[in-house]
Amino acid sequence: MHSVIIIGSGPAGYTAAIYAARADLEPVLFTGLQMGGQLTITDKVENFPGFPEGILGPELMTLMKKQCERFGTRIITEQVTEVDFRNHPLTVKTAAGAYQAKTVIVATGASARKLGVKGESEFTGKGVSYCATCDAFFYRGRRVAVVGGGDSALEEASILAKVATSVHLIHRRDRFRSGPALQARVEAIDNIHPVMESVTEEILGNDEKGVTGIRLKHLPTGKISELEIDGLFGAIGHEPNTAVFKGHLDLDRAGYVKTDERQRTTARGVFAGGDVQDSVYQQAVTAAASGCMAALEADKFLAEMEDRVYPGDQP
Image 1: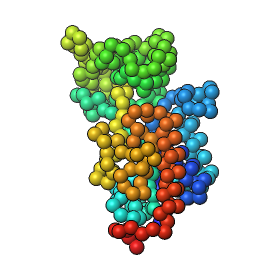
Image 2 (image 1 turned 180 degrees about the vertical axis):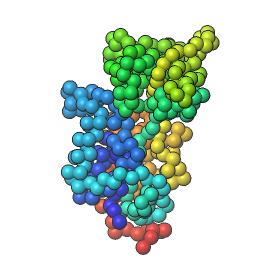
Image 3 (image 1 turned 135 degrees about the horizontal axis):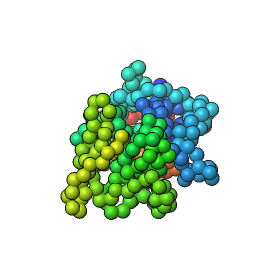
Image 4 (image 1 turned 30 degrees about the vertical axis):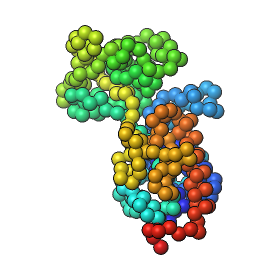
């Protein structure tokens, strides 16, 4: 029996673990498949407080992990495959077995949204990627394209521009949705070429070479063209990682976990923080803040409910 189980290892999960560990709750944290979450695929983080010169995303996550462990968090590199939040104690299952807890903090984050075009599944891992930090190395001296117009797309393009000969930045609208500072930085990079008001219709390639190009449609005119590239990076947003919680927690129309102002979900003793419940801000600092709140609320829940018995609770 654990006082608190944390599911997820991004800024929200690690921050929750730091606070829970310092409260002597001896938290257990399941990392999931992507240890460190989305920040592990972020090149440089320049807006996280305390790092005036910026810090690499993977480095920031490594520091958070070390801080968790310093205070006694038990970190388990497994993925949660099933939960049961109907009764207490709460149950969390992985391929290795079942774990029980008095409280659970959900911090599973969000994953890259697929483009949904012909050839995407066929060439994923063979020229189609969703992580420039992970795969930029393989495109040194080659031609690539990035699909998207928000912060993540422009970040991906700037990372790839350091190694690729050319980066085509494809966006369906006539202007980017990212902040002005990031746009200015990207516009100053010579080998990034915006392709506006266009969408990817099909990813082209073959078994031998992988991706060789993409078929584009210019929306105002309907004109179809082909662009020769060696790799395509999707950066059109994310979907919350909530599949395992369907039927156990209330989700909104987009699939994000519903929480109140105190990070409480609709299941008693279950809290949530980070991008899994935040469809608006989705920043590392807000994720960390909500993880802190979730841990403080879990601690309060344990203190208030320690000696109470509820109908349906297991003995």
